[in-house]
Amino acid sequence: MTEDPWGGFNTVEMAEREDPPAAVATWLPVDLSSYLDGTHKPAVPTLLARTDGVCLLYPGLIHSLHGESESGKSLVAQHLAAQQVMAGNSVLFIDFESDAATVTERLLMLSATPEAIIEHFHYIRPEAAPRALIELPAWHAMLEQSYELAVIDGVTDSLGVFGYSTKDNDEVAAWMRVLPKNIATCTGAAVTVIDHVTKDNDSRGRFAIGAQAKMSGLTGAGYTVEVAEALGRGLRGVIVLRVGKDRPGYVRGESGPMRKSDRTQEAARVVVDSTVDPDHPVVTVEPWRGHDAPTGTSRAFRPTGLMEHVSEALEGASEPLSFRGIDERVTGKREHIRFALDVLIDEGSVSLTDGPRGAQIHTLAQPYRQRLDPLSDLYIEPGHSQTSNTAVSVPLPYTGERGTHTQPLPGTVGAQSGHGQICGLCHTQETPPGRGICTRCANAQPSKPVRARSAL
Image 1 (cartoon, one colour):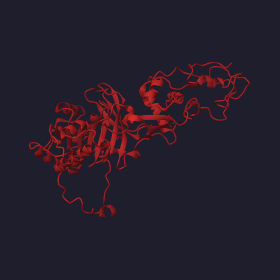
Image 2 (cartoon, rainbow, N blue to C red; image 1 turned 90 degrees about the horizontal axis):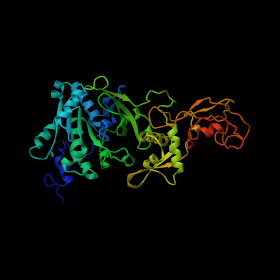
Image 3 (spheres, rainbow, N blue to C red; image 1 turned 60 degrees about the vertical axis):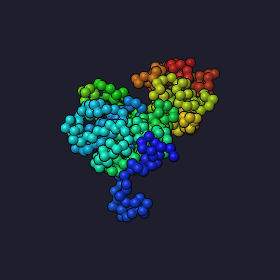
Image 4 (cartoon, rainbow, N blue to C red; image 1 turned 180 degrees about the vertical axis):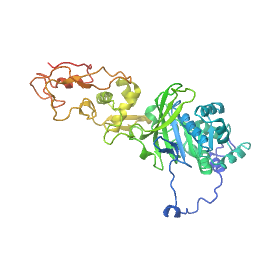
């Protein structure tokens, strides 16, 4: 039997040794009467409230905030901690990554008072597993407290302190039982673990770095943290929380449409505004973008020009492409190309399959064209005939900058006339003699230089 570095027990024995003994034998039949007579109250989210009153964290359950470095995941947890201590609620903060000075400074910036921090904020910076003789009394004292919120910042380092592997599912599951589950069960806190994601976008999915057991062990909700607008002093930053797991199910129903690339939904947008006072940013947790749009209307901007470019890249490829392969073939900012690809996936124009080494491979299900999209400015309604003096005005090409257009706008640049065959693309316009398509469709082809031309 392999011994671990913390006292000569394997990982299973370690978990059994550090789990507190159950008050009642767990192998006895469970009394189901409260579930049947209506007296049982299901867990509902009560923490991290959006401005519309919807909350994102469940008391007594385990949650995850995982994202890239400097994505704002610790900031979100610290904002919630500051809120709770100012409300007079106790907060446990177990820090494996930062230090007391940094965390305290952040709480003060987030408008927590020194008095509230001293009275309600319990900060722990462990350097050894709790089974060490000097640590064990403090470990049991911690579990005897009641907390509204418990934050475990730095899952990878925490696993190392406990002697567990980050990639072994059995060992990660043991760590989940030893630390997050014990805290949630014994203290009643909404436990939030802060973790990293892999650097490779194609293989990231909706999980944190390492073993699948991290997501499986969550009893509440798991959120991917993404930066929508840069964070920094004097800036108005935006952090997007996307829910990838919601075991009780209350958050998903209050979130946006599912993104098929990773099966996550936008649950909230955390605005960090330090434009007025860089030393005291104002943090607001807003609902997902487009939540208040009328039924039947478009809830978000559609980069239809880039969507068509992505479609053409997949059409021209000899085999399905990873995102890296698409990015190499399409001009524009990487984040904008990914957004266009996500829309195509959401709408069924592109399908996903698993590729080698965990990569996601994109296959074109059906070509996308702006002229066939009712939400595009280039859409041509079936059976519609243009008047004899209208054509298309095309703006400057898309450069990847936020202020540039991604699709042409309608306008009048010259006269169109002629008597020939009907256009083979839009089936509404006559083509100039000897041409297969009309001038409007010819001008709108993104594979050619974008320009406005008068009809022959």
